[in-house]
Image (tube, rainbow, N blue to C red):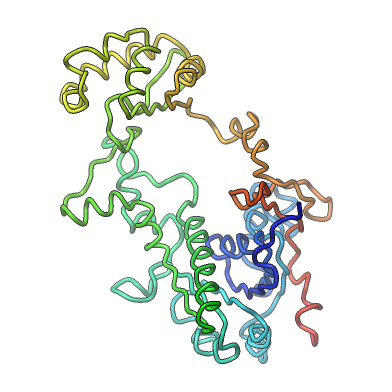
Length: 386
């Protein structure tokens, strides 16, 4: 079966940099869209980041490669005479225009929504920013970790004795990219329905708050902030959370429903706990969870985390030893799901494993097929007089 390309024939002008915007257009490229990435002289800053120095020195650092395969790369100084006209000329034949400048910058350059839609009245114009332009902080710039602080994510992460802790990876950036791609697909469908161009407005803060939708609704409704849960489950079930084991590894457990609770007690060698009057019913169990947690803690300390994980899995109780990312890769689940594609990058054609789209379409993981390009690799194709 041929690879699905639901966005074949869709052309995208991509003026985004760093993570959120490029990850958005990367998703659309994996779906078959033609993405023309326009960068400033020397390329965007992520080209020179990442842990593989020889690639960074070539402007093909891992921080760039992660979300820029399957794109054409154009180098253009937007402040040079005639450059904006060239971008508008490209936009005239495009379906989508994506930028993540600080609010107001695109308009000052002559590449705001009105200017671009004048060049192509049916185009989808997508603006990605930290806070959306409106409101008391709408004008501010930000990066992922700043939005984590602004959104309250940091205050919900960590334990009471640790203080606020940010999430380890730039989740807000990548979630914003996914949100933007989702919105663009909706806008394309709306254009198909109405024949009219659309404006898409994506905010990192909006995305961050929606990632905490349950917390957001609770706090907005009650006016009371939630306590830090540390490694406890969001359900706060006494039979869920994180436990130390005999080998020092941590085990994350989620026995949230009654079947799972009964199975957990069985695996721990104490099926009678599930019949104890203190823990038989969920409400009473919450009221008496201190004693139950102490028993769990003592029992989990008698065996290694991997052993508990296997025992619990055999009984259908969700559990996992806390792993490092390298372990997850080595154990083979990403490979089984075709999540990564090795592509040759740079002058030495170093193999770099790049992510697919994260879901399967007709069994296809939609992996990238074209390596990230050098700065200005495709100038000759798209800027004829360069």
